[in-house]
Image 1: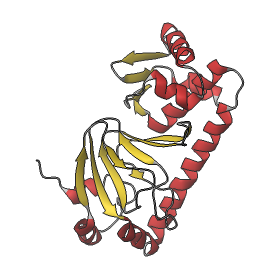
Image 2: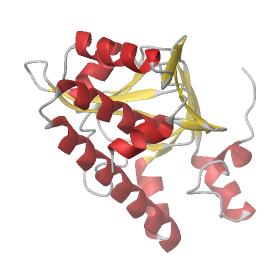
Image 3: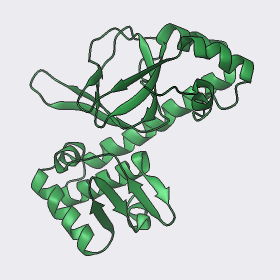
Image 4: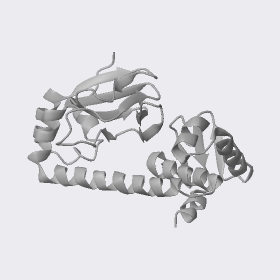
Length: 229
C-alpha cells in the first residue's frame, strides 16, 4: 500500500486549503485513510454517525429507501467532496447509506473531532453553512423538476442536475465520469428506463452528448443551461 501525504491531500479540499501548516499537522493525528471496493458500503442508514468522510478518489452514492423499497433520497459524491453534511451537530445516526460506485479512496475524521474543529473556526463553519445552502438549493431545483408532467423533460432536467453536480469542465465540454446507468437516471428523473434511453439516444443523434464507456461527455452544455433558465 502506497503512503499518502496527508497534509498535501487535505489542502485539495477548500475547507482545509487556508489552514496553517501547524494546524494541518495537528489535524493529521485524527485523519484515517481507508479504501473501499466497488459495491462496498461505507456506512448504512441507521449506523452510528461516527465518521465524516473526505473523498480522495472515486464516486459514492448516498441513498435512502423506505420499507417498500421506494427511493426517498439519492445523491452522489465526487472527488474532493466532504460527506455527509446532513445532520451536522444534531444527528446521532446516519439517515442514509453510502455505497461505493467505483473503487474509492477516502479519509475519515471522527465526527466529534470534525464538529469541534468547526466550532472553533468561524471561517470553516461559514464554509460548511454555504455548502449546505448550495446542496439544499440544488435539491430544491431537482424536486421541482421531478414534478414536470412531461417525462422526457424530466430526464433532460435530471441530466442538467447531474451536469451541475458531478460534471467536470474539459475545455468547452463537461464530462460526467460517475458511472451512471439508465436505471440510476430513471430513479433521479422519476421516469422509466425506456424513456431515459430514448432521451439519451436523441441527444446523441444531435451531437449534444456522447457516451463513451461509463462517461457522459456533454459537448453543448448551453443546451442544458438554457433549459434551466
